[in-house]
Image (cartoon, rainbow, N blue to C red):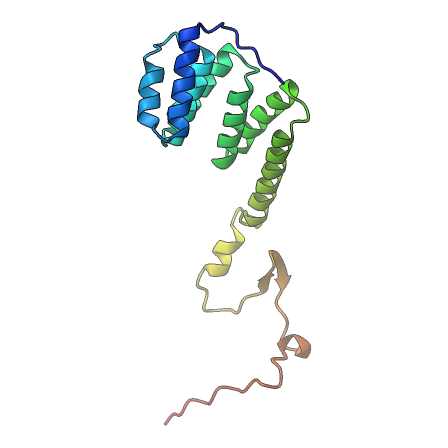
Length: 192
């Protein structure tokens, strides 16, 4: 899909963008950034997208996110900004924000395989988060807290097995307590 930006860049801006992109690809981020910043605050969307990429590559993620957001305010269908924000939010674990940008991206460019891959990653991340979330017991306590709390007075009344709470075997349940033929009782303590 070909995107036409709202502004028509003049030939000098296009030349600066090409130079800045070449510098970015060569790893000369500071030189590329200086070149783009020379265009000033009225730089076109292409220059701001490239600057946002540079900011992200140099670890200035909040600044990059703000700049991509400004681009989307002017052009809500800007695919590079939608892609970058969806990917960034997904990587940061902000599922709802990622999903919002993926929804907009799908409306602009339905069926994009990259967007579909990111949706699969999002679904997987949410499932993993749900499976590792602490189990909550009645009364608001978390299972992990209860199981790790020292309680010398009584044996555990339940076991955690593969994320499920199971009742502990009773002393009369011989099969549950079978430790195999190799088990030896520890030696009795010697005493007075």
